[in-house]
Image 1: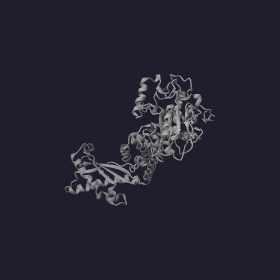
Image 2: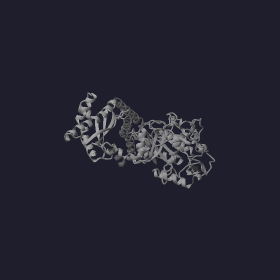
Image 3: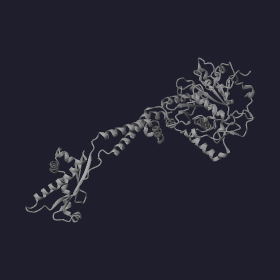
Image 4: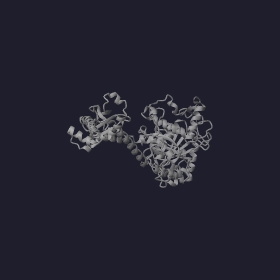
Length: 573
C-alpha cells in the first residue's frame, strides 16, 4: 500500500507507457479531433485575411568594357567577378530605389520599396539577381525589371565618375533575364498554413487529452489499475445494456451469441472464470467475497453472472447475499426473498431449508439475505456467520455479494472470514482515490485482495480489450458451457472452456487436442499476470462423483419443486 500511496501522490505523465498514451488518445479522440479542426479552420481564416505577396526575379551580369563576346564574359573574367560583389551593395541603395520610383511613378517611399527588394550574387559568378516583392503581381514584375535597369545606370554613373576623362568605365551591367509575371503568391503558402494548423491542433489536442487524463481521476483501463496499485486485473467485462437491474444474468451462454454483443460478455465471463482457476493452487480459495468501492458499480451483476458461468462449466456454486442493508440478489435471480442468511444466523432455519435452486441450472443455488436486521455488521462478523460460510464451502464454491466498502464496514468485516476478495471497479466511474480508499479498508483489517474486476468497459473506442472479434465470431463448440446432467456424468471429461475440459471432479484441465505445450503456455501467462493458481482442489471440491461426502444430503432430499423461475414452493420437510 505504500507503493500505491506514492504512485497516487506522484502521478506524473512521464510514467505513462505507450499503451497508456494510446488509451488516452482513444478516450479523448473527439476532443482532439475538435481542437484539430478548429485550429486548422483558424489557420485557414488567418490565410484568407493575410495580404498575398507575389515575387518576381530579374537578373543582369557584369561584363568588362570592350568584351563584346558574351561567352567570354561568362567564362569568368576576374575583374567582373570582383566588381559584381561590390555592386550588390549598390543595388540595395536608396539611389537605385529613388530611380525606380521615378521611372514607374510609385507612391511608396524609397526605404519602403528597398525593404521589398533583395539583391544576391551567386558564389563565384558575375550574375546579379534582383527579387522584387509586392502585393500586386504586375507591380512585382515591373519593379524587378526596372531595378536592374536602374542599377546598371547607377553603376555606369559611379564608374564613369571614377574613370579618367574621356575614357569609358572598365565594367558595366547588362540585363540578362527579364522577370516573368508571377502566377501564385509566395506568402502565405496554403499548404504550409494547413500543415501548421494540423500539427498545432494535434499537439494542442494531445496536450488537452493528457491534461484531462491527469486531472480526471476516473479509471478507464486495466493498465491503470495494474500500474497504480500493483494488483492483477483478473477480469475485464464489456458494457452490456441487456443486463438490467431486474434481470441481470445471462441465462444461457450457449446461445448468447445470437444476441448482439452477447458473445463478448459470455467470453469475458469465461475468461474471468479461467483466470480464477490460477489463484493459489496450494491453498485454493473456496469462499470468494465480491464487493466494490461504492454502489452502482455492478458487483451484484458480476457476482451473479460469474456464478452462472461457473455453474455452466459443471461446478456447484452458491451465491450468498451478504448485503443485509440493501439486498438485491433475489431480484437478480428472481427467487423468494423471505428467508435467508439472517434466518440461519438467528436459528430459525437450516441451510437446506433456505437454499434455492436457480431454474436454468440447478448447480447454482442462492442464499438470499432474508429479513433485514437492525445490526448487519454484528451479524456478519459473528462466529455463526463464519461457521455458515465454512459449511457452505464444503458443499460448493461460495460467492458472497457484499455491500460496498466505503459506505459501510460490512464488506471489510466479511473479508476476514473469506478466503479472498475481488473488488469490482466500473470503468469511467470509479476513481483512483475511491478505489485506493476501498483497498486501504481491506488492508487495515488484513483482508486478502485477490484482484480487481474492471466492469462496464466500452467495447469501442476505449478500454483494454477489443470485443469486436468476439461479437462477430460464432464458435462451433458454443455448447461447451451447456448445463451438464446432475447424475450419470461422464467421469472423464465434459465440454469446458475454450481448450479446457471439466474432469470428473469438476476441475478444468486442458483438453488432449491442445497438447502440453498449450497447457504450459496458458499456465505461464496466468502466472505472469499475477493470478497464480487454481480456484479449488480435488480434496474439497463437491461434485456428483461417487465420493460425495456423506454430510451432504442426497439430491432427492434437498431439491425442491420449482415453478420454472427458480422459486422454491416450500422448504423440504
